[in-house]
Amino acid sequence: MRTTTALEQEMMAQIETGQPLEKPAEMTDEYKQHLMHLMLMQADSELAGAYGYIPWISQAPTIEEKLLVANIVKDEVRHAKAMYGLLDDLGFDVQGHLAAQDLAFRLQDASQTDIGTARLKADKRVNIFYYPLETWADFIMFNFCMDRGAGHQLEDVLTCSYGPWRRVMQGIFREEVVHIGHGETWVRRLAADPATRDECQETLDKWYLRTMQIFGRPGSARNAVYRQLGLKHRDNDAVRQAFHQEIKTFCDKVGLTLPPWQAA
Image (cartoon, rainbow, N blue to C red; front, top):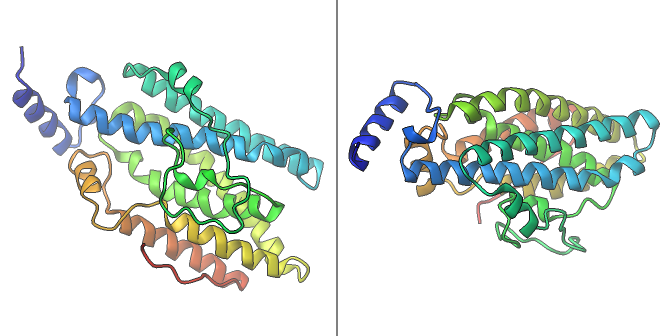
């Protein structure tokens, strides 16, 4: 029987040569716990995101748009199902977890509320999913900002050290790119219309700042462990700045401005 030290040495040698781990027997308990934490954050966020989008199927302005929003909801639920499936394969009690959570929970009135990086429930969703989508502009700007932010966060997973997650992310990532395109189409439209331009800018200010909070603290010790284990490849702030630069380039083209952001 391999000792814990021998298993860790074998695992790290495999990670360092770029060979993904494929089964629990190849990973230490520490690696497994970090892996499951990250995957559960994604799974809960995917499902919470779908729940937040559901009301906007009925409130979308055209039948074509209702179908587009419904398809985004379907994609997000399918993403959640895929992620919970990976967790189930590692022995996680998915049904018990879902039964104990309220992933549809949102703040009742977020107009005067900034929860920063606080977690309000026992679930593992990224905390931006606690904010309600109260207007069509909220829905669009959440789609525009958060789907893009999530894409930047999850980009590292495409080459992470756990093979099953890496492969599942191939399909999820392609669909998230489509969602980002939907948000861009609508932001161009809202920014170009004098009747909606001011609301578009105000809503961007709100969701941009909230999205900038999702990436974690610069120089995080936990992030350093994730990078050592091959579960991430970049510091939190490197991912944040990539998101910022991309969204700034787009906003410059449509005449929108980004508010200043500082780490808390």
